[in-house]
Image 1: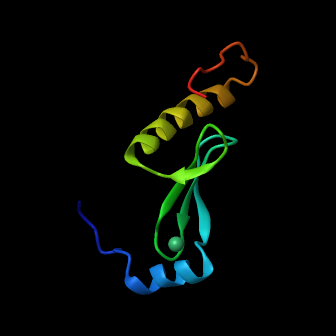
Image 2 (image 1 turned 90 degrees about the horizontal axis):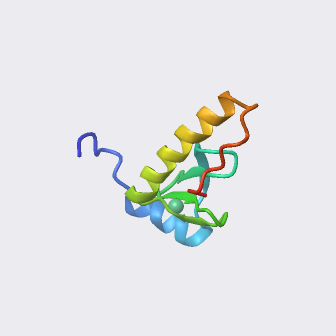
Length: 88
Ligand SMILES: [Zn+2]
């Protein structure tokens, strides 16, 4: 709740309504799942398990952080392919 100075203003929102959001990848969670933030209105999206873009809710942020941990520990041990996550 601190540092809330980057509050979205009306003009970027209007820009997005006119031209659409301008999403940039802010985080690579796994090879397939990424997090995006709109440069103008700071709206956040993520990729869900179907590969579709959805709003990044606190729940998905949590799922992503778990996925990220699994993904990174798995890529560190590339040879070990027997572990298939059921979270996907
Ligand atoms: Zn936007």
